Every structure is written in C-alpha cells, then in structure tokens.
Image (cartoon, rainbow, N blue to C red):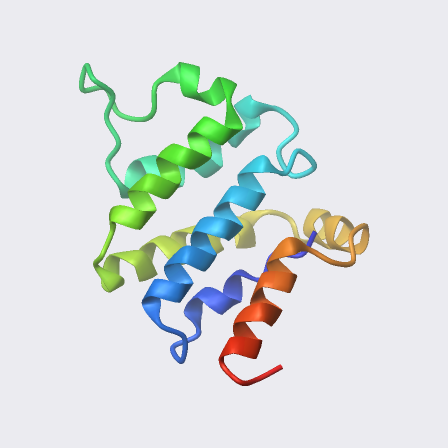
Amino acid sequence: MSYDIKFLFNPSTSMEVRKYYFMGVSTQIILDRSLFGSNDSLHPLIAIFEDFFQVKDKEGNPGFRPYLFNSRTILCARINRLISQESDSTKLKKLFESFYNFFNDISSESIASHQESNNSTLLQDMKKGLNRKNGSR
C-alpha cells in the first residue's frame, strides 16, 4: 500500500484535518501485517508515540504495558486517543516529523516493493475525498 505522509506537511490544509489524517495513516500502518509481521516488530514504531507523549503505565514505568502489544487495535485506540487530545500544532508537527523520519530510515527498497504490490489504498481514496471537498481533484 502507498502511504502519503507528505500530506501532513501541507500548510494549506488545516491542522485539524492533518491530525485526523495522521490518525488514519498511523492506524493503517500499525494494522498492516505486511509492514510489521509480528506484534513484537511494532515496538520501534510505537516507541515514537511513547516517547513523544511520555507514556507511563500505572506503576510509572515508561511505555505502554506489554499486554497492549497483544492487540494492534488496542494499541491504535490508545495512540489515537493521545493524538486526538493533543491541540498544540507545534507539537503535532514534531510528531509528524518523527513519524516521517522513522519511515525515511527504513530501506527504500522494502517500501518500493511493498508499494508495487498494491495499487490503491483507503488513504488515497480518503485524500481524493478531501480534495473534492476543497474544490480540487
């Protein structure tokens, strides 16, 4: 699948729209088993959110509790709740940059081969819908 995360840096789109787009992109990426085959392989990606939001468990230990990694949907729910509660646009931009940089560090070959195997995505369709609302195609 193709993930257009450069859209997050488009200044002509409101931060609120970019925030919800980011929630969709991050959810789709976390749920994509072709990118992260096992739940344990999600740790480096989830660490971005844990560090950014300074997540601590009930005992004060840094990070999400280990049982949350048994369910990708629960992880998505926790992360999306944190993102939706963030209202500081400067902080959100930093989160977008961290997320973008994470995927720039992944080898371009693996991303290219993954993109070739899928022609259309839900996110591309969502973006087309947003563009139609804004009057462009």
